Image (cartoon, rainbow, N blue to C red):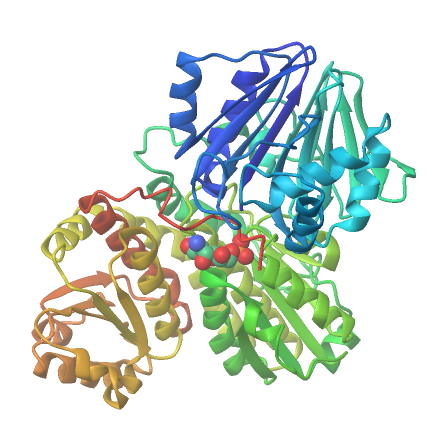
Length: 621
Ligand code: M6R
């Protein structure tokens, strides 16, 4: 949450910082601001609203400088006002600071300072932190920052300018992500690697409890104890062009349409090509799953697993729920799927015989990280399934299965959900295989079908106009009820989440069999029911639930399998997806729901890539 960008070097800092903020706007867009240092003079410009507002403001009152920092905010402490927008300056004007995170003891510190007569201009925890650093600053900025960090509780990524220092700025990380990059005579910082890609691919991922000094000489890295550390960098192979919308009106649509190629990438090298034979020893013979190179646990470890936990938030949790159904069927393990925020606060049985899988697109979600730390402390074998191999989750767990979806910018996750479905399906089947619960014949059928799915996805993606027209005819709906059974229930939850997130229309999802236990009471002609009813083992039961809803006059939108003529009779609108193996239907049924949500939001004129109140990466609890 909150986007941060900083620059020092020979170029105009304003352009670079604003460009970075535009790229990071998916992290927050309540307000935005920059501070530009021209010698010892620091100019600040900030405003409520988007980076576009800030640019317009700067076009009237330009600021310049060769060193600058900028922030796009997702409000935590203090409302969305210009006063609360970052950067913040301490009341003595010595320190200018931007912040992502929450300083938990800011009330306590604020009261202490207020008693001494300090008057704050904002309601934020950030301004208190700026004053704390300023009050400790004599002539050694590093020492002041270290002493301040020792007094601060909570999580924070800070970028700091000192008004009497014009050749360096400072970054601090304790919790929220900060990445750094250096090129000849320039040094950058940002909340996310995407903002640095136009300038460098050699990235330093700051660890917790680190302070960096950035100058035209490069990056000097220190621990909170003051010891100098090696400035290690990693090369990131994402391309800057991957972070542009291209011809698309929204990132979300672009990312939905990329799902065929994402699926291909996620599967590449992990399933044997049925024509060429599998690549790994395990999959000797044609086809088959091969995670040998990536599965971080020994054969012996894998055999000792008794439990598998799948833990995540939001959309990632829906992918985990789909995988949970598959794990029930193929692993023979005791399976638990839980939202990270719940998992971390319960007394979950979790030990060395537990495989704990943490699923996160960003790898920076605060609850997922906390849950993973807890499971690791209890001795579980932990694995991150993430799109960000250099994220905190991946680094901390050290065991990663990568999604390979490329950068996802739209706040509503779509292509990474597809990557998660693929990675988790392979993982679960791999475990099933090791456990002796997946027959060779079934393995081959599933992998051959997985390889065909990208083509089937592309066929669905070609029917965007059908879904747009369908969305048009439901644009006045009061809300939507999604139903499905088994993995289709999880897909219903994902469909409802997508719709809520970007269209702000109420939507809820229930297991179809639960309808009669309450939700059916809300059905009437104004509440369309979206039924996810592919031709699988649960189809007939779902069809009965559709009839029950129809008998209460609810309009029915069915997502069904091609060739299913029966379902037409009971539905007002049907969208047909190609047939596939029963276990793989989620890959196909989710796509029309993403497109339906996208088009409904577009018809309603919503800010699709920047839905209200949301941020892409939830780095605070
Ligand atoms: O980065 P993560 O996968 O850990 O994020 C989890 C959720 O915050 C995320 O999926 C959220 O629900 C998205 N906005 C869904 O579209």
